[in-house]
Length: 275
Ligand code: ADP
Image 1 (cartoon, rainbow, N blue to C red):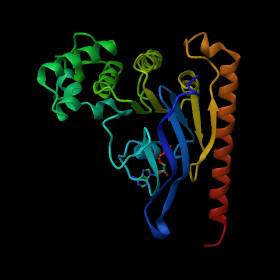
Image 2: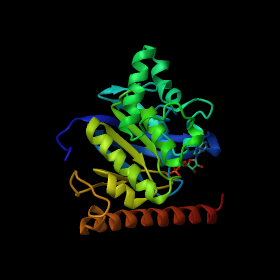
Image 3: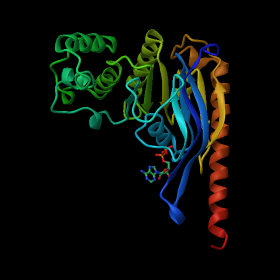
C-alpha cells in the first residue's frame, strides 16, 4: 500500500544498554527499521522486551548507546517538532489544573504561536478528535476515553509528520478502545501522517497496521516484519472476521511465543552456568 513511498523515520543499527560494566543490561540490539510516509506501523513483542525503550529512543527522550534515528534523511540529535507522542497514562500526561483548551494549547504556546491562532487551532483539533465545545472543561470532568482524545488532540495540534503512541488504549474500556482505534486510523489517513504504535494486543496491531514489527527479547532484535494484507479500509467487524486477519494473528503469536521460550531458555542456561 505504502511500499512506493519514501522512508520518513529510519532507525539504523540502534542498540541500547542500561547500566555499565558488570551490571550492564543490553535491551535493544542492532535494531533497524523504517516507517514510510503515511504508514501505520505497530511494534509488538513479549512483555519487557524493550518496546518502550525503543519508543523513547525514537522520540529522543533517551539516547541510544549506538546507532541512529533519522527523520526525512536527517539524523536526530534531540526531540523533533515533527514527532509527537501519546502515552498510555492520560491521567499523568494531562495537567488537571489546566482546562482542556490550555492543555491542548501547550505545544503551540511553547512555540510562540499568536493567541488568536492558538484558539482556532485548538478548537479545530478538538473537533477533529470528536470533542467539540469542551474547551473550558478540566480533564478530571471527562471520561477516560475523552481524556485520551484530549491527549491525542494535544499531540496533533502541531500537525506532526509522525505520531508515536505507547500503549495508548491500554487503560481504556473495551468498547471505547475500538472507537479510539478507528479514530486513530481515520486521523492517520486524513492527515497522511506516519504512526508508530506500541501495543501488547496482537489483534489491535493487526487491525491497525500496514506492517507489524515483531521484537524478540533479551535483547530485543527485529524478529520479523509482517506486512498486513488487509487493504486500507478497516472495519471492526468485517476486517477482524477475515481469514487473513486470523492468519496474521497466528503468525505473530507464534513468533512471540517462540521468542518468549528462547528468552526463558537463555535465562535458565545463564542461571545454571557457573559464574
Ligand atoms: P517493554 O515496553 O517491552 O515492556 P521496556 O522497554 O519497558 O519493555 O523494558 C525493557 C527492559 O529494560 C526491562 O528489562 C526493564 O527492566 C529495563 N529498563 C527499562 N527502563 C529502564 C531504566 N530506565 N533503567 C534500567 N533498566 C530499564
